Length: 159
Ligand SMILES: [Cu+2]
Image (cartoon, rainbow, N blue to C red; front, side, top):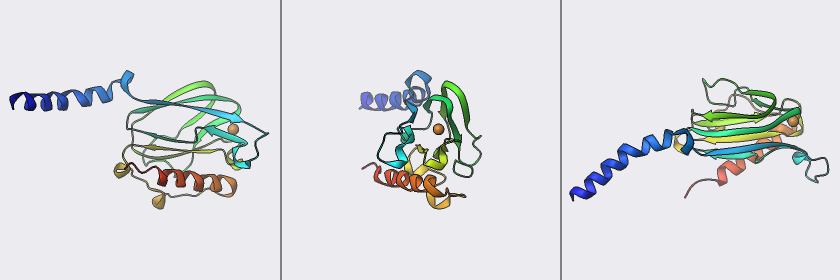
């Protein structure tokens, strides 16, 4: 009995430290791709992957923000209070996602061709901005793409 209690205590003590340790937090690389030969028009310019889920404190490594490719957070489509994301002319830049919520990112140049991605940070219950409360929408192909991403989000409910 004592052993069980102390184990539980140790686990409580250690887990938060492990979760916040930089080396232990999960990370996801995201590439930016131009692929004029693709048959699906929304894939011609794309983030890969275009949908990512991470725990709070997880890291995103944005690769290949080169040439015309950039990473820009979409106005009104990131958690409130989060500083906007704007990455350009950078081979690789890492962001730590400390605020739970949904982040819509686009490429400044190719967003209108549907170069849009979605990052979901934290548990579903902790998201502060489910799509229904998003303050803005995207139009044209960017809007079409975001609809597809929201579908992926809805299919990704942990069981
Ligand atoms: Cu681009």
